[in-house]
Amino acid sequence: MSGRIFHAPFLETNTRFKFKAVVERSKKQAKQRYPQVISYDSVDELLADPTIELVVVNTPNQTHFEYAEKALLQGKHVLIEKPCAATSMEVKALFDLGRKQGKQVMVFQNRRWDSDFKLVKQVIESGALGEISEFHVRFDRYRREKSAKLFKEINQPASGLTYDLGPHLLDQVISLFGKPKNSLKLTSIHREDSEVDDSFAYILTYDKGLTVFAHANLLVAQPLPAYVVHGTKGSFQKTRADVQEEQLDRGMWPTDPQFGLESVGQEGLLTVINKNNQKQIYYKEALKGNYKGLFNAVYEQLRKDKPYPITEEQVIWQMELLEKESWNR
Image 1: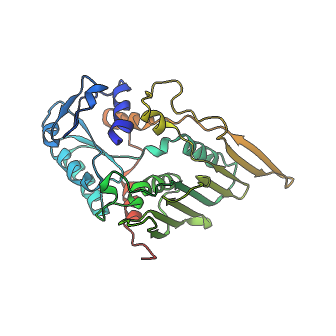
Image 2: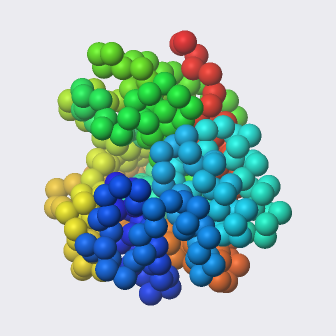
Image 3: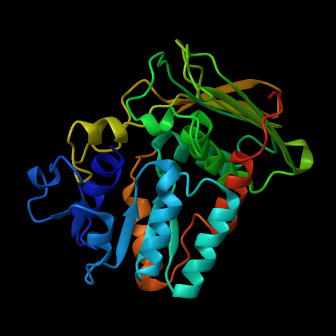
C-alpha cells in the first residue's frame, strides 16, 4: 500500500526523478500502471542494479533496518518509511553507516505536508495565538477487526499502533516544538484477542509551561478535532481532513489540479480575544496538501546538498519516545 499510494505516483510524476524499478515477490502489478518499470523478484536483484541511486524502503516495519543497511552497503541513498527502525540504536547505526558510505539516510515523514497540519503550523507561527500553552494532536479511527497487514498485529519489534501512527504524531510535534523536556507514554489494548497496543497517549512537556498531548485510538466512533491549540491570545482547532491518501488510493495523480484540496466545510476555527477582551471568531481555509514537497526535499538533498528537513536528531528523538516504556504496563 505504501509504495502504491505514497511513493510510486510521486516518483512517476516528478520530473526530477526516474522511477526505475520495484520488488514484487508474487503479484506483478506495477506494470499495469507503470509499464516502463522493472519488476525484480528480490531485494538483492534490485540492489545489484548499478543505475539505481535512491532506494525507497517501504517493507514491513521490522525489516526496515535490514533492507536499509543492505542498500547503503550497496552504495545507494535510502528513503525509509516510518518508523525508520525498531530502536534508537538501529537508527543511529543507519545514520553512522550512511556517513561512512557517503550516502544519505532520509526518513519518510509525509504528514508534515498534510493540508490540515500545514494550516495549524501557519496559525501557530503567525503569532495569532500568542504564547502556546497546550497542543493536542489526535489520530482517531474505528477498526475493530485486525489489520490484514499481519506484521502490524503480531507482538514483535516495531508493531502495534504506537509504531504505526506514533511516528506521524511525534514527528509533527517535534517539527513544531523540538525535543521535549519530559515525557510520559501510556498504551493499552481494547480489541478482542489483540496482541499489540491499539491505543496510546503521550504527554510531553516543554519550556515556559507548554504541554503537548498526542493520542491515537483504533476504537473511536466519533473522532474529536485532530488539532487543538491554546495560547495566551486565543485558541485554534482543526479536523483531520487531508485528502491526499484517499485521492491517491482512487488513482488520482498528484498533478491533478484538485489534488490536495480539502472539501468545503472543513475549515479551521480560530478564536482570539482582542484588546477589548472580546471574542472574535475566524474560519481558516486549509493550505493545499502536497507530499511532492517531501520528494522535492529529497532531490534537493541529493543534488543541491540542501539539508533534508527531517533531521537525524529529530528521528532519534522520535525513536526514543516510541521505545520508551509505557507507564501503565
